[in-house]
Length: 241
Ligand code: G3P
Ligand code: MG
Image (cartoon, rainbow, N blue to C red; front, side):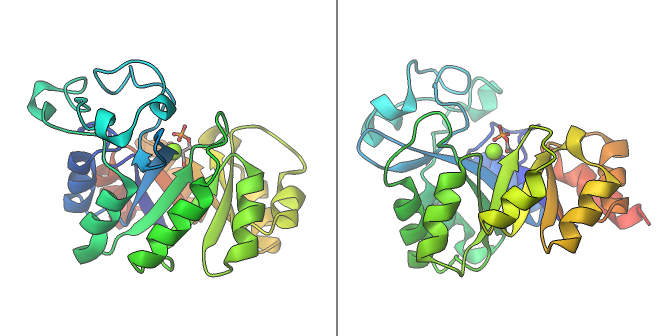
């Protein structure tokens, strides 16, 4: 089972920042999950919320600021004063950071609220530039992005994200030719994993932070989990039969 650090090791470092990615690497996560949006001038940046206030000292929407303006913000102090110099990273910062580490990547396109025209192209071109297409899965709640990306590249892996119970989830994921489904943990059942696997779809679950839930996902042969505490998951994986 693949362990992705959800927004980096986000329990102990500010989510979606280089310190959180560093910590995930030092805690032996297999991969990094991160969320990407576009600035006003079209730069892909890593931040979860469409609004800046929760994870920075800024206000308003990410989409309304240029990248130069966003670099002025403090994206670390909200977590702890020790992270005061932390900035919002770009996707390119992450890809550069990963060059000597070669972790797996799950890039979540955060385009279910704002469509961010051009996001898919921009992300795909950067993955090509850094030669990281093969180790990356693109996930999104917005199925149109998967359909669009599929037309351009069959090398990338795609997953459909959902937090909703839907009896048609598997046929739907198949119809858009996703490789996997990334589901909220509460939707995880043995039946769903079996059915998905019968249809050549893998199942990954988010966000799994409790030891019992991590062990359950391991025992149910989930393909991957997303956790804020990769160290805990790595330790449990060693000891869970
Ligand atoms: O990609 C898994 C998970 O991150 C999806 O939800 O809201 O945490 O981005 P969210
Ligand atoms: Mg995410």
